[in-house]
Length: 286
Image (cartoon, rainbow, N blue to C red; front, side, top):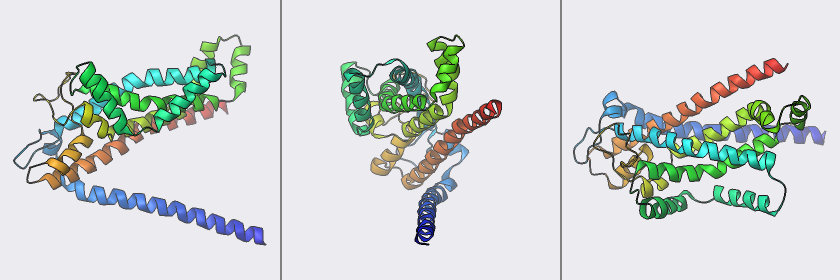
């Protein structure tokens, strides 16, 4: 009797915690979206920002956000997934690989502002890239790299050894096994990792303030890698802290709501195809 009562109490407690967390998240989203959605319009999404008069937009910042995100993933995904494959499938267990794993875990917990100061010192000052899109993208890729390495390694290790043994027994090489068996099986986990780092990169501001700058190019959209690259999150910080425009509050609320929507839509666009692929693969295996 006591065991059943304890089980019911634990079930109720966990359901209450879950609903509490969902309620907080729903309130958070409602508060941001209800305040910001009325300020979002086509002109707001396409026009350039204003410094002194009302009515400016966030067009260049919206473009820079996706441009820097694309470049950072272009740099970090090959190296992150490659390093994860090496740790999971090729690296021997010794002091060196233990050191690499420890360093990766430590880097994953470093505050983003430290990466920003590193990017300022290396890319902006030493390499003379200035406050630029390429400097911000390279620094963001360093932020994302440890997460991708750990997610890739853990996801590949979660694939059953029977998959490897069956592939090798059929005459496949180790690389063929990784490419055609392990990576497709681990794809949902890899997609989850990419989604996490993409969302983090879109909302990052400390790094980009120090490396990409707080201004935009006179031309929009500007594909020049060495142009200033203020993003939505940096623009939100700038408007709320130093903005002189009369409608600074409205611009900040609209930018915050748009940033939330962009992250949600990006997560759906990345996660849904992965779920469909996972169901398709499960159907084939059954």
